Amino acid sequence: MPEPKHEKFALRVTARQKALIEHAARLQQTTMTSFIIDKAYQAAEEVILDQRHIILNDKQWQALNDALNAPAKDLPQLRQLICQTDIWEG
Image (cartoon, rainbow, N blue to C red; front, side, top):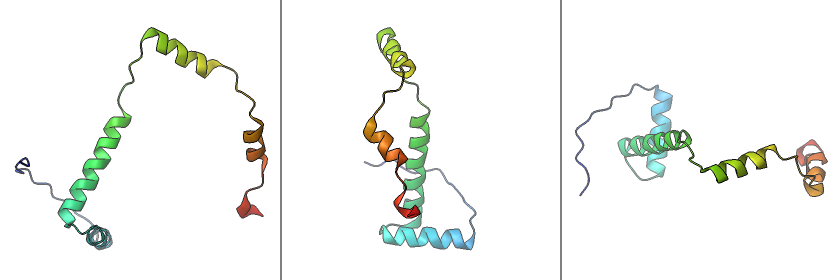
């Protein structure tokens, strides 16, 4: 059973913002409210997950530090790719 919704959340937007959000909600076949809540909730989860700490034991920490401090490997294919002229530059 879905959790009951008791909290209100009011927003002020420009006409352009509202029109864009309404259009996107219609494309997703949902209401503006559901669209805004779903997208805001997803964004909030991503922000929070990006801020989480990674816990490593001593061995894992040492392996990470060793990898970060190791000299860069020469990868000829990567070097060739980096030196190529981008296709949009001709």
